[in-house]
Amino acid sequence: MNSTTSVEIDKQQCNGCGICVEICPLDCLRMDEHEKAFMKYDECWYCGSCTLECPVDAIILRLPYLIR
Ligand code: SF4
Ligand code: SF4
Image: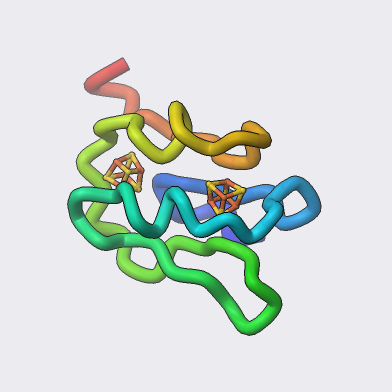
């Protein structure tokens, strides 16, 4: 897991549905070769859509301190 990105995806939990990739308004997320989501571009606006829509709660959004 990459702990430096805004969004961390638990690859054990991810079921490969692709919803987060489809829903991200900034197109930050992609599926890897194992059909697990990952953050390809760290351009996150912290909208929270991916965390809300993930059916298995695999996505952790790290809000920067200033907007918590
Ligand atoms: S929405 Fe959740 S389960 Fe679906 S691909 Fe994204 S991280 Fe994986
Ligand atoms: S919080 Fe919003 S902008 Fe950031 S990765 Fe998730 S859907 Fe994309």
